[in-house]
Amino acid sequence: MMKVASIVAVFLVLAVNALGLLPMARLIQPYVPAATLVLGVFLAFAMIVAWRSPRRESGRAPAEAPRPTPTAATPQAEAEIVSFLALLQEKGRLVDFLMDDINAYDDAQVGAAARVVHAGCKAALQEHFEIHPLRPETEGSTVQVAAGYAADEYRLLGRISGQAPFSGILVHRGWKTDGVKLPRSLRSAADRLPTIAPAEVELK
Image 1: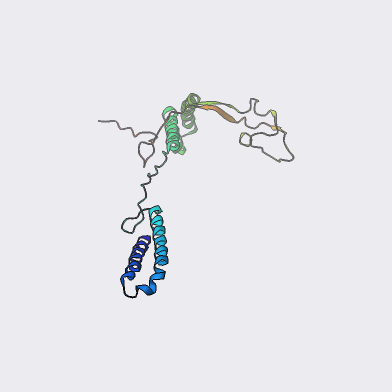
Image 2: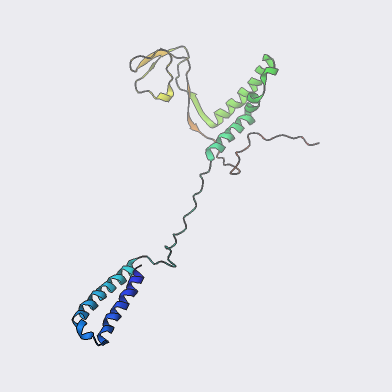
């Protein structure tokens, strides 16, 4: 737009000066200097604005620099959860035990299988977690829950009235861990999680 205005202003300056060559020049001679000055100022202003404005090509705004494509965060947490479940399956056959229909077995068979699951899963937990009871007292003992206790460390049962500290019977000692040493694991592909346990095929 400013480019067109500049061209028009140039032609007007030329036209005003060309009028001085016509026979009627004496009639408009007093107005020529003022008109030339006004058009010159307009032309200078148009050139400054055009110079400061961003350049455009073919009537289009300058292309923006390409923006980096955002990359999706690696779903590492899900892969590590599945990997630990695979560890419990490997050490204690936990998934086999939980997914099987135990109604087809008698209590003695279920008990024998549970001992294998218990031993293997306990070993896996002790290897990767520093687990210990939240309360050291034996269950059935009278314990005190101090004021300002962590909400995730206690589940208060029965009728609750007043403010802490509370006194009650320890029904379950609770568990907590002071450290986790799980192996780092990533998805093998973007569209699938790691396998819990591979299918075993005995070749003939």
